[in-house]
Image 1 (spheres, rainbow, N blue to C red):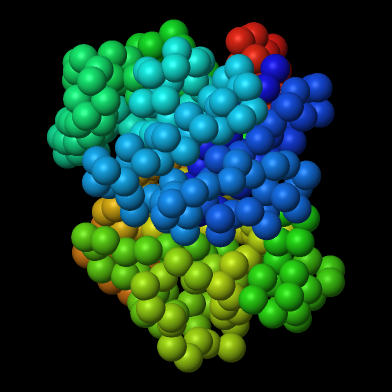
Image 2: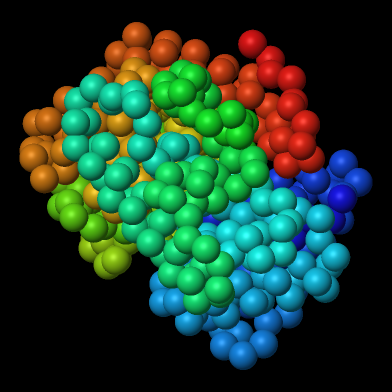
Length: 393
């Protein structure tokens, strides 16, 4: 089979798709990428071709593209990739809409690799998150309106406001989760497959002065120092937690290793027990980590859950951060706190619970085993081929 992968260039979008592309290639398939030029090095460095783009080449398939004209141009780029590769299947991630239009126009199968959380409304309530259904309904309305604008501009009929009818799930939708995390799985559409973590990083992630793993942090080689991994991420409708974390963490014996490349502003001077980098390799830090602090972005939470590390979620309010916080809360694998109500005492108490609460750590270990049993890229590749991969229980 010939797969055309369509992706934004953000690491949280394209890294899992590169990992899946590598698995598909190992199974004998041909894979090429339609993506921004900024991702060309990553793609070619892993042995894949990138479909060349014309016109506004620097902005093709940009996450910032939200206007109808821009998205129509992106869809034309995807269609040209289908023709150039003679593709059998389109493969993309959540919230990438040009492949949806290309599927509608060309009749080509579409596989969507989701994030941690199912983004759309369901009949299952999430205790403690009564406001989440309103967020999901708004998200579905906005996505369907965007899809219909593209369809109208292309002379296609409009679609109803539901995830399947609007094509948001593609033909197969691969959710990077487990039933222990996605408690609504029993009521989700049959095309939804739970495939586990699907984590991937380039082999050189964490090398060099800007991309450092654990090599220059001066950690004790015997593993005696406990690590708290921090992934702050961008901030939206909530108060940033970094200043309070730096204040509280300064008096703790643990070593804090923080990835801050996506913060809107660089942090100021940090305590001696803090090591701060634009990007920290999760593949290197999470096996040594005792706790994770996250703004709710899926990469750090999936990493924490799949490695059995309890996580403190301080949701930024953007994207799927509230959805992810709700899953962490319901699974018993961590603590969720409102960053707008956060105090030093609350933060310190939460960190101590992550580090020392035996029940929390046991539940995190159970969920990590569940993630391992879903198969990851092996299961995702089988589903992309139209098969159902066996699940280890």
